[in-house]
Length: 463
Image (cartoon, rainbow, N blue to C red):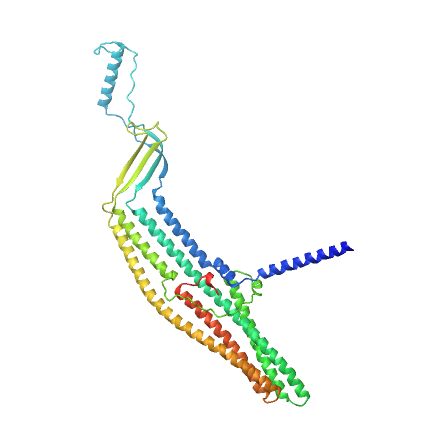
């Protein structure tokens, strides 16, 4: 008996743990707003494109630094001359005569005595054979670039910084789109709650009217008025259902998540209060990107002028096949050289002037953008303040309409008002709550716009 009881207890314990696990697992499958934002950023094609552009800028920076690495090449060639290269005939005769004198001296024969028959003489070899085979290694290494490499590196780094900042700016746009869609979905679900509550009121009123009609205290028109109000609610439900489907599809497109996993999300709509909102646009990523681009053009200009400074290079060469070298060809050599461009047809000067013009254009763009963004920030501040005030008024209207609804409900029960007046109070109460929902949404939109205007919208400060 005790064993059976113990077994049953263990089975119940295991089942409870499994239920807890599955509830936790299903709960974790419902993504929150920050998760949706992270997914949207990771899925964005624009972000992927910008990240690829950042990789290109990183390679540009590496290429500038790698200019100091040695460049080694292997070369092979075959050359056929029209004839072997030899010394002039009088020089060859002189060498042959000198050879005879050396042989006579070695044999102890007087220099004016002819050589004995059969003593061989070596032919004078040509300076270069007619067929030439060459295989060699060449190396060259930049030792001093005149500052060009250093300036090019700095220009590439600032260009990379600009691209990263533009990526951050693109992330802000994605965050704004996701939050706006998510909040709109919260509006739809909040309105569904309001409609369900209104439907509950109407159902209660319908039961009250049916009882009153059976007792001869109400007429048929009261029933029809309630039916008409229910039909209007049904019409709103259809609109909200269609809107919810479209919003979930939009979230799915932004995040890459299937629509099934988004059906269960239940966003809550609350005001987004900006207690420490920034009052300037200096933190915006796009303005910082313009600053980085301006710095990049400055260093590009310096890099172009560096073409006219001396360059120092080390070089060397090693012949791998020595059998075909001429008398004057070395087997290997190393050396250091200086290259100084004195005149290049004004190419570097023209390039420097172009980058200077590019910098001027960027500076003008930044000045114009700053003026427009400051004007937009002023507009957003006024809009945010207006939305805060409208939200406060909407909240008071909900309280007032709720009090009116409670009073009309008591008056209806005592027969002091007719059905039309009661339905009007229900409609006003419903309308005020929906207006409060819209006011809350507008306030959140305004807060997001303020954060975007100041470059402060990140996934860390989402409310």
